[in-house]
Image (cartoon, rainbow, N blue to C red; front, side, top):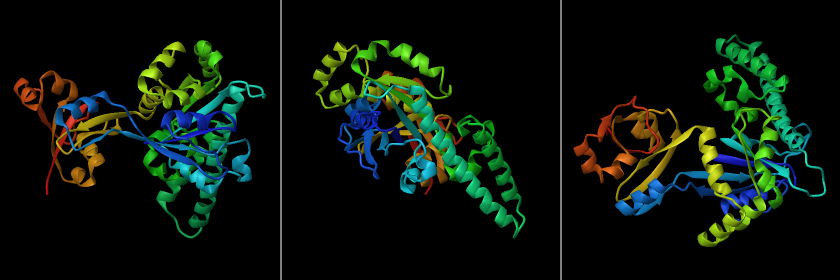
Length: 351
């Protein structure tokens, strides 16, 4: 899972990156900082206690602290092709909006739409360039595939020219495979973080309600004081708990964003266990057992036979695999079984 942390100059996105990653990130004009963070999972912790494996591997999120985005960056090409490419490769965006005094007026809605509109414009340029190339190709040869692609792209272009992101276009959900290679920016899931100062944390609920009225409804919003959260990230666990309680913060911003990212991207985790390794594997909710096997290795998907399956809760309740078999909750599932969050799987595959 790759998430790009984005925002305008001075919004606090780099401070949020530090709060999430626990490492320093220096903002440089043409470079992005990258960090990989583990997704805490109490189920993996408990299974590690039981199996005592050589390795424990949690689900992971790759974070990129991208360069600041300002109005006109795409049109003037002051955003590098490398940064655009890296953003297109992201699975989702974490947009940081400034809600604190830095000497300039606070304009959450304006700041949001500045970046939002840059993404729409970038997609418009990408589609127009592709359509121009396609029309040159069509002069040389007729192709049903090209005609279908052109019709889809024209529909996307009309939607974008109405100032609507591709994430809200129903037909792109139906034809996602045909357009996957474009990696449109406005199609990707986005989450927004309102970066408040300490004094505004108590009124965070009303602030979120206000911004939700002005931005697209499919974008989830949370609030945080990234400055405080970055300090918490460097503290020992007990010290952090004390300070968080003083500020009335029940959960760290890292925990909230990780959960929000899983919800926004529609992800769940299945588990594999053994003496060598206990591991969480993030997959799309709704994947079947054969597709989930491919997350471990493509060979397991191609040569899939069955999946030994038991839920984590049953495994703990009945004290292991033997107890689960005795209780009748251990089972063999076929290719079409829809994997559930917390399933412990052992994939059987052919040679």
